[in-house]
Length: 443
Ligand SMILES: *[C@@H]1O[C@H](CO)[C@@H](O)[C@H](O)[C@H]1NC(C)=O
View (cartoon, rainbow, N blue to C red):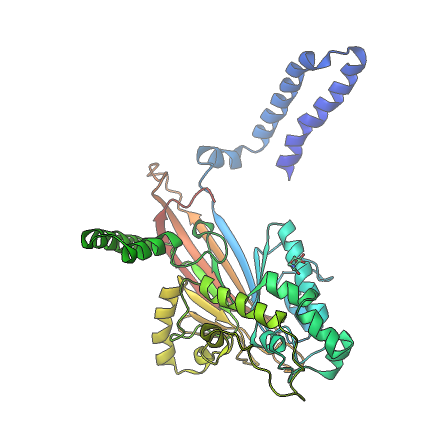
């Protein structure tokens, strides 16, 4: 702050002098340039004189700076705006008026905003507002469709409160709003089924597919054409590439988010999350564009559209990412064994999901590799108000004995602190630290 004020000062002074001299002589610019430079120089040295202790370090190695990222995630909200507001407030995402604070880098909601409460319209409008406000401060909101959003899109309205329906006016008005109207359009444009959130920007923006696309092309090319020898060489190249990927020390420094869970036997995990989201986009389009069927009940369950593909059916079935409950229900041994393969396939180190509530606390299993954040926040359940907070830091190791610690082989401490936040307390789920070597400066 002081720094930027000091930087502005010469400009203000220059403008002042400029005006004064313009009145005395018309060809002011060439005459004044030395003055302006002189003043700028004066203020620069004054600034350096003030900030010497900080400046020495950063001027020596301006490119090697610590990196921090703060992520907050919340689970099922089910039509309760006041409780959602409280959670986002004590998590630092919004202020008391519900506006984005700018204090978090990513806010993630894992779906099931709709049903079991009256605040559907308000909550989705608020999410759009936060998404826009976040963008203006360099933050990002990641929104997901839960099984309840999908149920409503299908016409399965079993959990719609009559009082909630009144906030839309009529059945037809609600159908319209959830298909071609403001809520439905935002679902199509701003919501996904799954996300992959890299902890460090060297892995790319959110939802950068895993495995990286150049590796996939290599594999594809090798099977499509060329002689056996070519194929072998290509295979070796792609194999090497894969090996390098595995060796990429931050390659799995990422989190996955989904509503239900990523089953180990779900066939469309890769590329993650691109394949799942492609299916979500195409299925939602079919649902929103069909003539809206009369809702169930009292009408019969409409089901997926007749032109839904096998893969789209699998997206929505019990083993798919919207409904799967294995990570909450399987025994410890099976869950902790299965999770490794899914993390490997999705290029992540933890998976975070809602859907299966525990009304007392966030559930962390297998050293925090599985985190289930649905605590029944809505008054419909009366569960615990909670969120998940992740603080990630990558800090350069300053080693005055080894000044060669620059360039491609910097040493860093990677730390990730994952905690569950409640109204009255914070509980650490994981606090992990390791040393990594690589060129992670410049992000
Ligand atoms: C997507 O989100 C942005 C930001 O919240 C919003 O302005 C926009 O209207 C949304 N898109 C649609 C199609 O609703």
